[in-house]
Image (cartoon, rainbow, N blue to C red; front, side, top):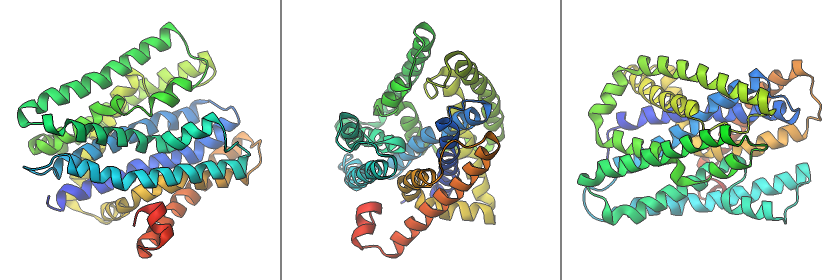
Length: 352
């Protein structure tokens, strides 16, 4: 078992990344449904892209941190699959029901069946994570310290290669819809580089120490990379009418990597001081899975009660209200589930 210090900074990082995810869904829903792809919603759309890579990095870190020194290396990833899969399917179904009741979307269609199997909206992350966990279990018999670098380089090459191919495709054959990214984000191997990076940091604590000391540098790099990335996506939106290619751009990869490392290093540095804010973030981190699962349903219900159109001046305040409702509501639900652990609804929806 790792000492508490090795985990509390991860919980704080999860909370901050989760807040960005919820803000993205809460605010951009009102902008994008109005056809508004101006600089304000694109800022949020670009900013949020570091969050999911961070979640994959943290998942890889924890998997490697608690890997047994000997014995069955596949046991832990298989246990994680057993825990996540029922929650994933339950929230897929619940989200589709809400979309049907609140927005009239059909329950029986090829799109609905695909979403039920692979995850609507934000639940794609869990589908991709399940794939990575399955790959880890399958690769366990072939894993060894001597092959660690080979596996890491293979994962990095897969992620980098996909981002490169996606960027080239954008310029050679400009897209006319979000279809490519809506499928690509659900493909687990695309995220192998971040997942492997987390495992590498767990197995090389001296590298994590170096990252912690240099977190201001990574923060500066993230800011610079973000400015370039934001300008890239804004130019695309002006040219094509929307941000059809958002995640998988080389400019985005630079920001996502620097942002992920800056967040982890900054939270670990803050852990040494353990102030009130850090403690609050770390405590909230226990409930980030529940927040991730539940918040989008609350966003959908919130906007179902707000008729379109919404005047430009009211879009940002409305997004802030949706953020308060969805983040606060999902956090309350997750904590209520922990308090009533063992109840049928708590087991089915939150796994407690």
